[in-house]
Length: 196
Image (cartoon, rainbow, N blue to C red; front, side, top):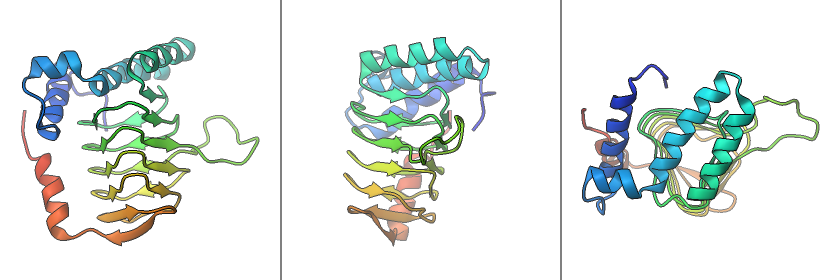
């Protein structure tokens, strides 16, 4: 996860990521103009730079304005890697201390929420970490300072409150953890096997 990737390359990567994940995407122009998840990610990247430059209030105002426009709330303090994709998007919430690796995909209604005792100091890690290649199904809630291992899949409407190792399948309320099959892991990795 780095901010040193040139902006034009990042835009191209994001467009290619959307097209690789969504068979309904017909062209880069359509994705550029019509994908609210992409708009939210691009706005987050600007707000995150503002946040890191200590322009905290303008960064929060931008994120709230984008929430109004897209229905997606990404806190500017969150750390998000490359080729992040939000499909459909409405109702997605990514909390302040969330860490999202590269090649992560979220469906609509996903919450990366905080869990901390009362009077926890600001900036304390209280949101989840999703390692590279994690896919989170619609309506899933991942809560607290937990780690979801690389190339795991979280089922729709699962409620996850515990760590999961890489290559896990998390389903249910509360979520139970099972190993993913090798075929599923290989298929997920294949989605990201492209070059710009």
